[in-house]
Image (tube, rainbow, N blue to C red; front, side, top):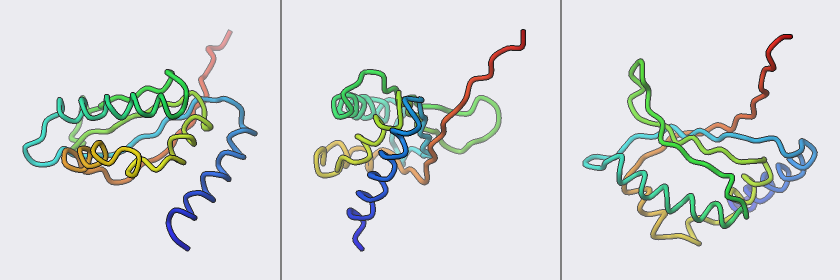
Length: 130
C-alpha cells in the first residue's frame, strides 16, 4: 500500500476519533537540528511562512508554533512546538500535501533543518485544590 493511501486512512480515522474527543487542544513536538551554516533566524522566518499557510489551511488563527531550546541541559538541537485548538484542526494540516502545495517552502525547511521524530500530546490542566 502506498504512503499516501496509508496517510489518508490514518488521517480519516484520526478525524473520526478527534470529533468524538471534542475540541481539546493538542500539541505536536518535532525534534530538530539546524543544518550546517544555518541560523535560528532563517528557521524562524521559514516557519513563519509555514504558520501562515497552516492557519489558512485549517481555517483558524489559533495555531501557534514556537522554536524551543533547552535552558538547562544539553538537548543538542531545538524543538518546534506546534499547538492546535483541536485534533480536527491538526488533521486538516496533516491531510494536506504540504510538499506538493508548497514545494519551495518545503525545500527551504529541508535546507535549513533536519527533524527526526515527532509526538502529539494532549494535556489536561490540573485545577488547584480548594
